Amino acid sequence: MGNLYFYFPNKLSILKVICKNYNQILRNQIFQIHDLSFSPEVGFALDLKIGYINTLENAKLFPLWLVVRRLPEIHKYSFENKKMRLQTFFGDRIPTEDLDMLALAMQGIVDSFYEQKGAGKIDVTSGKVGYIIIDYILRLLGYSKQRIGEVIQEVEDYIKKENITTAEYFRI
Image 1 (cartoon, rainbow, N blue to C red):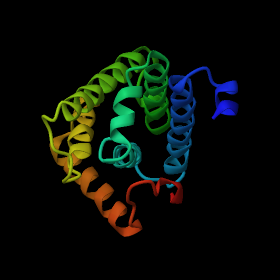
Image 2: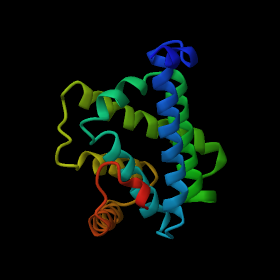
Image 3: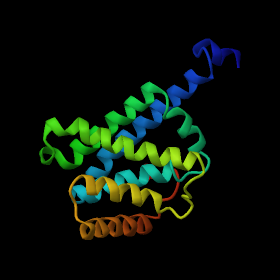
């Protein structure tokens, strides 16, 4: 214990390092999923859903994630990941001048769901909340309800086929 606190002044600093490392894993996941050659909207949705399986829908990680998301540097890193997702999957389809606002809108949607779950106002045990978030974000990006339904089904089929469950995102 003493050696640990030689490198870290407090528990919060330890959490920050853990979360930055986890965010880096999520960032690497963006490129792994992009390399699977799905359509942009399917790859984007798959990346988000796997992230939600491991944070929002994970009973063990969620309480920790809810707390650290509020830390300014972690929130900023999460925002940058959203921008990276948009750029990686949609490229030039999203004008540079719109990128920050779209990432900010995504961040707001996601944050509100995390807060509502943290307050006990939504149940995520069905695994569908991640898809609801994806639905809202894809609508924000201009996709039709029909296409969003197709995207969600394709993501769900892939997750079932690959048997992706909590903390198995490394397999992609």
